[in-house]
Length: 334
Ligand code: GDP
Image 1 (tube, rainbow, N blue to C red):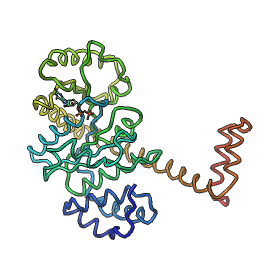
Image 2 (spheres, protein in one colour):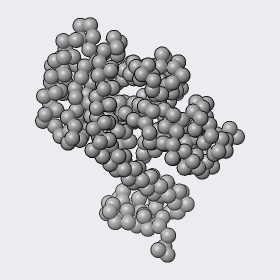
Image 3 (cartoon, helix red, strand yellow):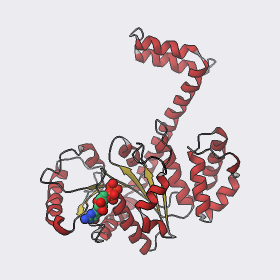
Image 4 (cartoon, rainbow, N blue to C red):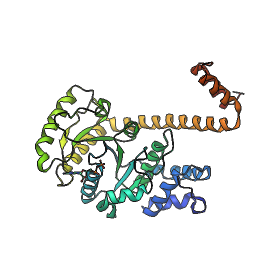
């Protein structure tokens, strides 16, 4: 968590800088929204309000896959391809674990060295690892800041372990799952739920000795998809093979994203999904706010301590305890 203190700028400076696409200001505003200082939060909300009319115009693509599947290599190749097509690409990494600890920003720059050198690409790793939806909140706000700064493709990378995929799925237009081909047991260890969230599956590292295996994995997944419920009943997720090392299949994935968005824009699903996502965001904000209030109240009153103690000892039923705890933070005169 970065505390900006004296380095904090006024909201108008952030807004003006973002709207003319200044990357230094984009970096600073991303640090601002990650700060948990109340004073920074006040400025960041003003900034977000000020840029809102200039957001929403990008295609937001979530990219997930287990460690080692080739995410960063893929994103670098994909990002370079998009930059080559004239796009401005922002890459945000959501990593709620401490897998990449200190210096995560530097870490990602070395992970995507070529892409980070491009003036039309911006890479940022979420350094904040606070609890309960904190990463998701930052990422949602980060997407808006990148959009305001003129990035028309926002790639959100998440490590395919745990809860982060669901969070990312709820903030993107298109969700791409990267998979690796195995020795005939491709479906092992991969949660069905993650496959069901995907709008496309890509088998990575389809090059050299691995071409045949990748082609086989593709058929296995295509068949498997017929037995699963797709994320969207209007779209059958394609399964493709690709090689980031040899630049193969990267364009096919972008074409799939293009077909998907044209279709979904036409039938209204694109906007509908974003509307739903805004509501999910609201619910998350409410949960976070309650959590913060409870924590604050906890440090200022012994009642919450007592309630928790009773729950631990089995003397108070959790649903009843929840009502009692909530009544502690809701003003009594309502
Ligand atoms: P991440 O942990 O998912 O970000 O995976 P990385 O992108 O770091 O890649 C993991 C390993 O797979 C590295 O050794 C890469 O060089 C290798 N790799 C990634 N993409 C490809 C590819 O397209 N072909 C081959 N042959 N190897 C790849």
